Amino acid sequence: MSLKSIVRELREMRDGIGSMSRRAAGGGGGGSDGRAGHGRGGSRHSWPGLWSEQQQPPQPPQQRQGQEQQQQQGRWANLPPELLLDVIQRVEASEATWPARRQVVACAAVCRSWREVTKEVVKTLEECGRITFPISLKQPGPREHPVQCFVRRDRATSTYLLYLGLSPSLHGENDKLLLAARKIRRAARTSFVISLVSNDFSQSSSTYVGKLKPNFLGTKFTIFDSQPPCDAVVLPNNRPSKRHFKQVSPRLPLGNYNVATVSYELTVLRNRGPRRMQCTMHSIPALCIQEGGKAPTPTGIIHSIDEQVPTLSTSKGKEPAVEFSSTSLSADLSGPVCTNEVPLVLKNKAPRWHEQLQCWCLNFRGRVTVASVKNFQLVASVDPSLGIPPAEQEKVILQFGKIGKDIFTMDYRYPLSAFQAFAICLTSFDTKPACE
Image (tube, rainbow, N blue to C red; front, top):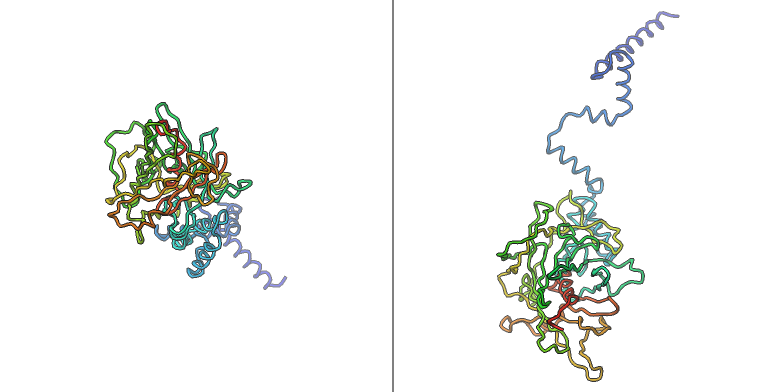
């Protein structure tokens, strides 16, 4: 062996021993022998990502929080704003009906940037005529055409389900459940609890929307909303509430808000005929029905990135539960909501007597096919001094009627919301001993 070869091997041995000692010294709690040090060094090559994270210097809290939010939003958040806006606009325009409409809700669930753009693209129900988020059920309907729905009654469970659509589908798979109500009987009276789902009617649940409470005679009904209307002052009730529920979130307001009253005319002589009803909408000003008027419209569809995106539930309950911006929780604020303006009053349209058919008739435009005392049409009843055009007073704002056994249609339009219209229709199902 030549001298050069021997010197080369000695250098290689020295370099190898030095590197092993350095690995052992930098092991941080490892053993002093070469095997332990080599094991620590081996982990550096086996987990390069983990090692690089450990070797990074500490970062300020704000910078670290920003990186965490960026990781949560994912790679889809890096799309150019113009491209993102165009994508969501195309999806919103193409998916106009349910169940395809759920694609718009899915866009809002991608990340924060997608959610903000979706909020800008999706207009209110009055403007676009499309129900997208649960808050759409609290927004007034479109002015030009009514929103057509149907109600299915389950006598066994005293449950009433509101679906979106002209009539029930053959298999019920495409029926979009909007709201559900259950009639709860107590010792003295009954009440209807309205929820977003058909299997949870607890007033302390996040799916609670409102309730309907009648008086003993069944002549007066009070509609309570789980959240206060926009730009309204609530007149509190002087009587303390005897019922207390656990508050779900400290951010949510506590109580039910009286937003409407439905009154039926008392029948003294018990003559048979159509019912006469009047609805006073405490949260809707009467001037909103004239041209240029504006009804209260909640728009808080999405809150923060760490909250679950609300989606409407399907008839089979396959989608997750949804949340509104507030829930009802404890006391009843029996005082009506004050809007500082004259409230809107609705009255049922008087039917005409048909001599040949020997019955009272109304033109439901083919949406009602079975004669029933529950059938009605509501129009505005305003003071002449307000200057509302007669054409606006003749428009049918809400109509409800029977089309089959336990199947009813419900069509509503501006300025009523789906929740308000559904609650008014529920008054037809309650027993009215003083009116019949």
